[in-house]
Length: 215
Image (cartoon, rainbow, N blue to C red; front, side, top):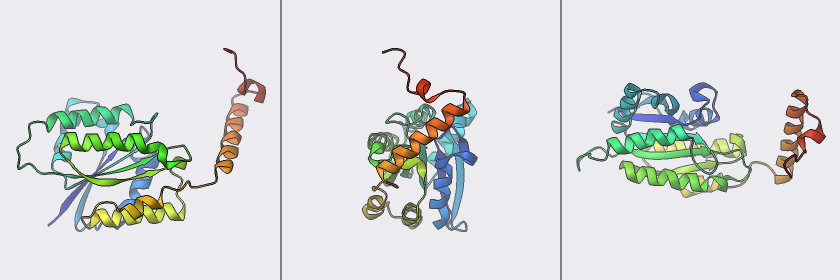
């Protein structure tokens, strides 16, 4: 029997250009397309009209598994993603006791070097899962702007294999992504270099970049 996976992308960059979608595709390598029907939804578009929101609710409700992937926005989720889930929760509030219970897994990434920066957003996703009547199936929380090392790629594939075979993302897989993808000093040096290049490209000197006009 064919099962349905719905991939919800919460990045404003959409299904083609976002890190969230790219990371999801690695995870989905483990899904056999003869067994799974995979649907992709960009949540920013899903809240753009009444019809799109209704389609979102219908697809989520009929899913066997939901994968939500998004970047971290100030310890939380992008606002359109939150709005989309609010609509799903409201629509499922009066569901019958025998209603289908989709499984819900989360893949978050942030620009900070430490994956633990995603902790609050993961807990928000847990609240969403409970409110919508989903079954929590685990999370992967990545740091370093979604940079994919061999270790991260292996964890994504492990998570995909677990989900495809009906198991939650394992603690061992989650532990695999807890270490930063690079040393902190290298991250800081690279970040400083990036900002200086951007400043130069926009006609700003180093002194202007370090200016404190409101002090």
